[in-house]
Image (tube, rainbow, N blue to C red; front, side):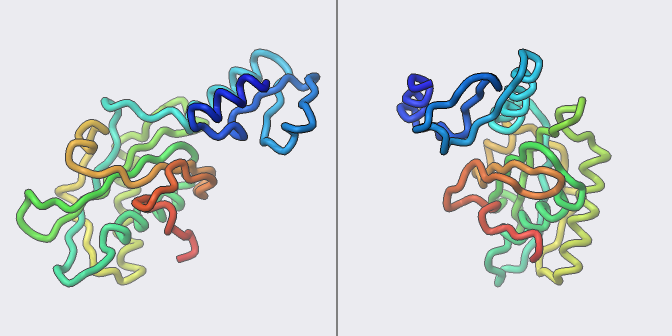
Length: 205
């Protein structure tokens, strides 16, 4: 166990997220403050590892997510964050469980005041790894309702919003945060940097 914890420190990974122990093993006293999970057999161990990878393993570049295009007034401030938060509210309303990756940016190469928020999702507790088009259109309608309810100045451009691969999002948008959702609630932010839209999101807003 000391070797594994030392390795985590060496590569900059938090060791309190990685400890797995058989239920009959005794954890040394100096490691008891670390978060750990117990497993009884190989089947439970596989489940723990699968759950861990569902959250921590990045989605591949060929997987599909959804790009939400918005129009904003030229005098607006914080419009990209508003768009991202409208989407997060919609994902909460859908009761999302799984990994969520966010990408965003202003669309300078298209005439008009436009920006885009791209969202990639890996569904947890589901046979389907990624949501289908119908699921995304339902999210889109919730985003429109959330914008209207909060009387935001931004407007979702439905004809310009579409399914997109992660590779395409990465080519013209900036990484804007990764989070773990459970039953519609953000339970963990996996990229707590300054450009993370999840860090400023509050379900009650």
